[in-house]
Amino acid sequence: MLQLENVTKSYRHRRGQVTALDGADLTIDSGEFISLVGPSGSGKSTLLVMLGGMLSPTSGHVLLDGQSIYDLGANERARLRKAKIGFVFQTFNLIPYLTAQENVQVPMCLNGVGAEEQTERAVALLERMGLGDRLDHKPTELSVGQQQRVALARTLANDPALILADEPTGNLDPETAEQIIRFFEQFHAEGRTIVMVTHDPRAAARAKRTLRLANGHIVHDESPSRVVA
Image 1 (cartoon, rainbow, N blue to C red):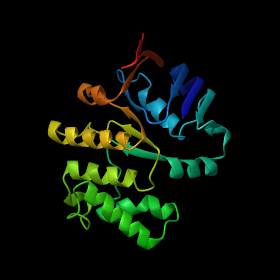
Image 2: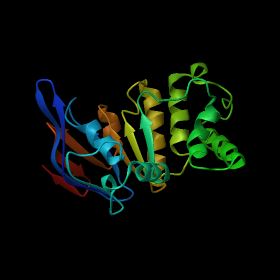
Image 3: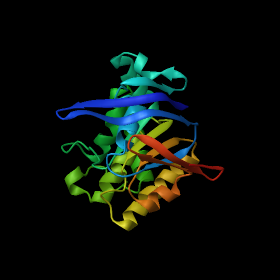
Image 4: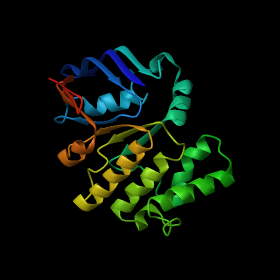
């Protein structure tokens, strides 16, 4: 489903050049649940946003379902993201003046879904997240954990095959973090591909494959079926 072919990403800095990824090669099959771990600055978030079509590599290719996504124009990449990719962020990125239901409807509106279907699907997704009684609440009227569950519902709005998550439990207490990881396990059981950046070893351990990054390199790749150092 996802491939990196000799991908390098470098940034210009006032003190010189910084290399966030250095010649990375990676294959992620459909339906995998992967955690990306490593110290700050190791290249995890760079890799994640690159997989999501939001940051072009300096060199190399990123392929989604065999398509080199950075050979597409910006509008084509945007359509690809809307059709296939859902994003989950540590800071939730909810629109503060919209209700929970309206926040979940935003991706569907952008994807041209009709108003009645938007409403039905948003309500169903929020009920799945245990928020059926919070449809009309704005983000400031919700707890941190409830806001993250609204964000998860929004992620599922366009039924993405791929979910990219950046520290989804980073702002949560242990009990709420456990609840969020259980939702990710459900999404994985439904056949979705999940790539999750995390500093939480408990969350990382729930994935089926762990990639450890250091200094822009994938230095360890572990799954139940293989261990490659």
